[in-house]
Image (cartoon, helix red, strand yellow):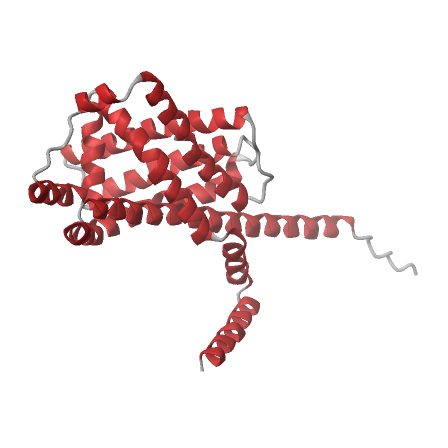
Length: 297
């Protein structure tokens, strides 16, 4: 019975691919890129390399500079309530930034910053796979990835700050969400260009960026409605390990949105390029076709 259902699904998929070529090409691209696997890899690198970097930066940077972003992240994921419940149940006290600064030396901090570039390289490899580009390695690639990561973190903080200022100014919710979508789209447009080393033109990256911004905003809105209760329940069941599970769940979702949006933008760009090429060939064919000789009497 299961085999018959799978066969019917394959037949239906082939029919839909013939009826809607763009949908078939999208499915083929998702299979080629392995969107779920790429998303898990990016999320794992973010959990193992990016989170320690953020902890170190929060400990060393002024609290007023990082408080807004931390509150926004905690509100989206429910970690604020979960952490409060965990501390109250275990009797633990969060370590202040001064304690972290005293435990993390200059050499350890430098190692954490350098290792965080593995997250940037994971995003780079995902984008290279999406755009079917050869993989780049070497010191220059690592330096570019690390530079992008630091600028990207600063820009994210700027996006959060703009949203916070718009909220205090009384801007309506829909307008704030639209502003976030535009800012995130611009940020990922720049990110695509930098990570790919300028190998893809700006205009060809615009569709991927335009999809990524609104998709991230939609995901964050949905996550803020669903994820907090889930994280609190997981923390009550698993304790401190539940906090890790909550962060991992949120990161996998974010990574899936980023990779899937880039893939859809790549497919849309290819369709537009093929359409423009076909229109150009038809126009050249009409101009180059020989004129019919006029009948002579």
